[in-house]
Image (cartoon, rainbow, N blue to C red; front, top):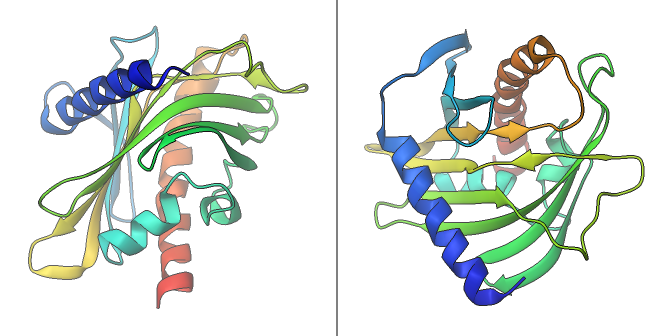
Length: 213
């Protein structure tokens, strides 16, 4: 991918993510479980939903980030039940890359394995927040893997935010906006994401304690 185009796209996605983070309007809560809230609103990117998750995780922002960051051979492959493999297809800078993520079948195999190719920008803010900012990209060198359906992530990612006065805890705000591709009933998709996101937080808390206590 052309580095200049990648940088421009990455900056645009980071701006979009900040808008999602700051805009509190229109969200409808669809799941609350163990201190984690999942809400949604219609996506303006595709005929589906934008999902927002929020919860507090025991661990510093750096410790939480270590478990979710986009890295080949990183911890996320080991604990995230929705990730079977992660690889870096192109490393553009220290904070900008193109990745491929493969996911397993889900929803009692109604959702077959998917692969996603994304441009990811990592950003650190002055208040200590660490964020990932991603969106799908296409390139003839990166066709779908055999046996996988290509899915498409519209602007998505997470914010690992420090909690004032509580240095050992992190507010994690996540955004998922995924077109799974294929021909899936809307009901299957709408039930999968809130449940999957709640499980993501629970599994993340377990792994942060395992690797950083």
